Length: 457
Image 1 (tube, rainbow, N blue to C red):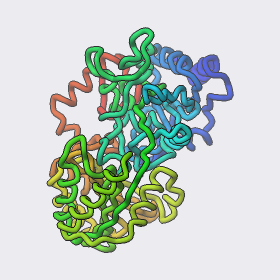
Image 2 (cartoon, rainbow, N blue to C red; image 1 turned 120 degrees about the vertical axis):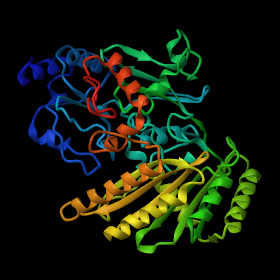
Image 3 (spheres, rainbow, N blue to C red; image 1 turned 90 degrees about the vertical axis):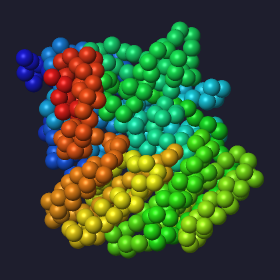
Image 4 (cartoon, one colour; image 1 turned 135 degrees about the horizontal axis):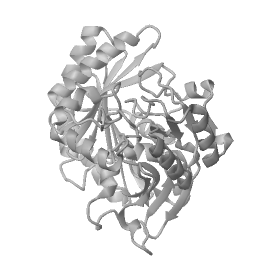
């Protein structure tokens, strides 16, 4: 087994001395994510700038069984990249190039560390856009978002989560160091213009894998012309049964959902006051106006009270331009995050209300945004880490336990301080299948050990 000095020298040989650090002050800077998980220290932080460097690092780590963890901008809420077993932490943010924007085939190829802000800025210069988002918005990396199959309220009502429709292919470094491309990209002289058609959907295998099957270095996305018309609506409701009916009607026509985005929320400080923000856009003014009027009628028929549209437009614009004041009110945390069927929403709200009342935790919101025939639900908390940490953990544990008891599909799992403990026993043979695939691709279990699945060995 190599000692730390020997590992350090080998990493310098691969990437140079300026992009490797084992200094405590840098390791501590990388020891937290957005979750309340306790700090985890890597032995080294390495900042690669090209795929070939990652391949060499992985080959070296695989030979000597050194764990590797992969970090984008550090925005995980589920401890999904914290280095549980030390080893090498790859900071992927130096790999942030926009490789190509193909205006003919309507695709964008980017390195995994490219942020959504950088991509959207370049797309808009060409009157193009990518029509989905993370709730965390533009500061998140494309690779980090896609590899966990993330999503947010912006665009998800119509287009679903990352990977459902618009991820066309990957360049990925496997745990043994081989570099593989997926989709049409595999074929000689073919651009990455489609995802299907070459046997199994290997792109789909990587979406949502949280990095345990390979290190994504480039991502190909479907892009679209920038919409020419947009409208916003804001309504208030007194109960979630009515909101559920609105979501049911708006997403009834699969592939032709009435709204582009539909986000709803309630604060523990004002139980029973539910705000619903709706975003509608398109390329034909008459169609956009028709959809707006129809959605407005749906809301009114379900006891909604129309408010200022600016409440919606300001919210959705922040999601794509930057949540500059996101931490102004304090540190925040999410619990009970996942997707549920379209008509099951009210029972999760009732569980959240009961739990936050029991613990007197009023700095909390319940949120739900629609996607085709379902809702993503979450409980959001603001807290003081110094005085409310234990209380937050107790409330989060109860929320997660109750929501998983009701039935929920999480959209992020992470490690043992994430959602992993709540679902391991519920996966059954599916969990074992993921473990078997992991063992085949990563026989020495070096890549993200302890993340998503507890152990592959």
